[in-house]
Image 1 (cartoon, rainbow, N blue to C red):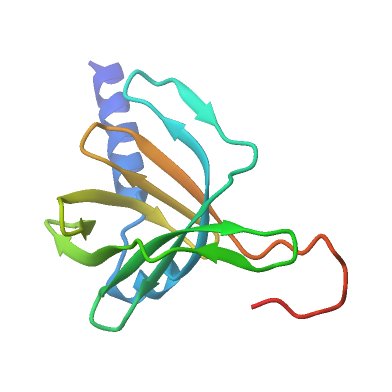
Image 2: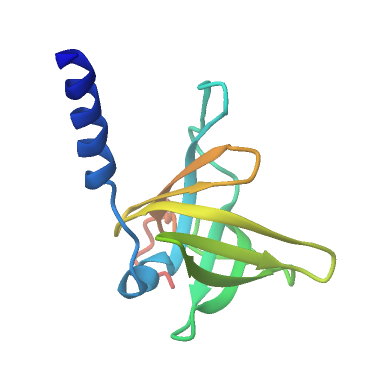
Length: 147
């Protein structure tokens, strides 16, 4: 019986310590994000060393904006096309969701955690996407400032 109470206490402790994403945190989403790893439903991980593309989020004060795939170049610039997804941040039942839409489809991902340099999203297939904040790459060392 004591073990049952210990287990319940430990579970409650972890649930209580889970970070809640607040409306004030939404601005942290803005910027370039690189996928570090994907955790699958069975608990297997797929780690990413270096990515050919980043996700660029731009969310405004009304909790809506866009997500684009961008490709970093060695001179600190990014290749960008005209493809993007509309994104809306939605708060419901103590959870935070990113709702995406394109002319062809709509879907949502739950925002599990968010800090200045880390973000975790989970999709409906229970895949966890672990992102790290990143920026331009400038391997040329030419002293020019990158945007």
